[in-house]
Image (cartoon, rainbow, N blue to C red; front, side):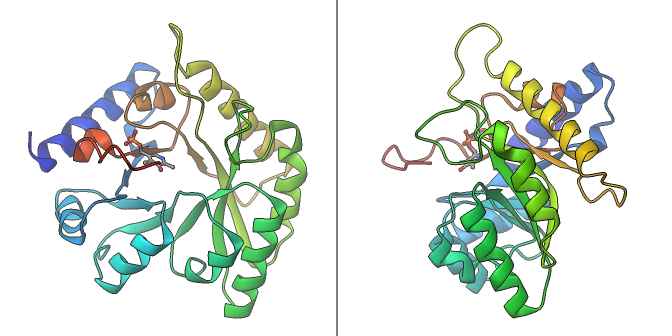
Length: 235
Ligand SMILES: *Cc1c(COP(=O)(O)O)cnc(C)c1O
């Protein structure tokens, strides 16, 4: 299948999963996880209907930005962000999806203040409680969200998660359901009357339909669009 056919097939699966649970398919947006793809492939994906690109490596992203590869699409940073690379990301992306610590939040606020802009962010939740994964523990989420909401140069837009590798019959669906509950709780607790909080980013190639069934508004899909990545790559 061509890239265009893959994109259409994934879009159709997103829409079907949304309708299954009575959601409007327009509530869910595909984020193309473009890591290791060339600038040309990224341009082709955008020409074929991708509206958001997600990058998880600062160096690759910077090279593609220099190439103007993302023209016509929004850009999200979805990978682990080290504080020493914050300067290369703040103000250059529409949304930083992967803010999982107070330390990183502080660094983003400081850089956004310096640039006199407001950076949209999501808080990454370590929903599986895995030691190897970054993200804030669910028990500490509210405190971090309150802090983010009080940062004048940050706009908290919602939550993101990368659940454990699926196992069992239900796969990651219980984690997605928990994430949705946290998302609802945060909106309630922060008294989000401006409705800034409108993003729940979860689901990848293997499980995005379940994520949509449980309320995802953003799904981050790489392999199902572009095919398998080289094996030495660590996501
Ligand atoms: C690579 C990546 C994805 C997409 O993974 P696939 O399994 O290839 O769809 C999603 N989220 C993040 C953070 C990633 O780095």
